[in-house]
Length: 373
Image 1 (cartoon, rainbow, N blue to C red):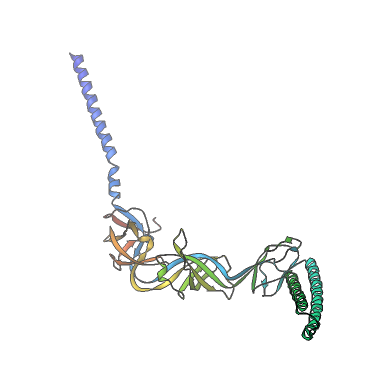
Image 2 (image 1 turned 90 degrees about the vertical axis):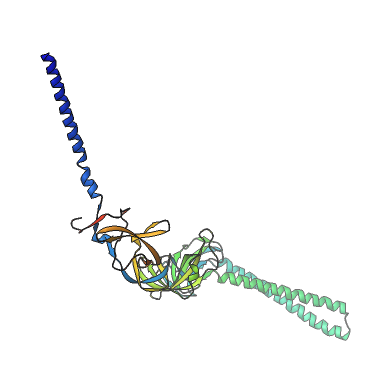
């Protein structure tokens, strides 16, 4: 009986100790959850993450981007075949209209001119003989010494001689033109953009020799959505930021009448004066077509906006509490990155400037400085 009583007592002690251990383990598992629960209702922001809404002047514009190209440019090509004797210009050199920039071996074409000239002189002699014969027989037919039928033959011979002379003169002109084309001249004032051949190379008609561009006036070709092109018109100012060159002002000069297939956009052309030659053909430019001004409107950075379908909202801070504020949007200033708020937000409201992901409305807001962060 004593042994049985001892076993029962030991078993009871083990049960009690197990229960105490289980209670302590459950308590230690619950303890870390309390700070997490409390921390979930507090959001910390740097001052750079926040923005005080105010009234601003916005510029209504359409974004444009594209590469600049020279308004006047030419790819000078060979008009005759032959061996290139000289290329007198290199890339980056200025040229004037009419300046000789290349020469092609003229030997063959000089021979053709000589041959055509000889044929022309022979045809000219035949024509003179036929004409003299015709004039003599015209007097004779008038006096009745020869028949009208015989005179008609002399008239026919004169017509054939005149046609042969015209053909020979045309052949001489063609040969002279080919000889002149062995001397290649610049078609416009500008700068050499590319030199495609070297002396000694054989070229054929339409072989590209030299590219010449006139940098005094450049154009930007840029697409505009079809829905917005109705607001654009010739003469409107365009502010351009050219990569590597700074800011420039251009003017819309033309609008393409056809819609581009696939993109459903319409090309517009912006002209930029470049008298000081700071810009170069091919530079990438980004800018905006100025459509008008909006003065003293409530505006926020575009980065502060959140979109859910067609619904727009911002995260506002009211008495250190975070809240969603639905807003109605107006115009967008592409240059400054600001968007007009038509309704839903007043000047002086503090909002979250940047997209920090999904935030919980009703959370307490705590501001921290950059050093602590």
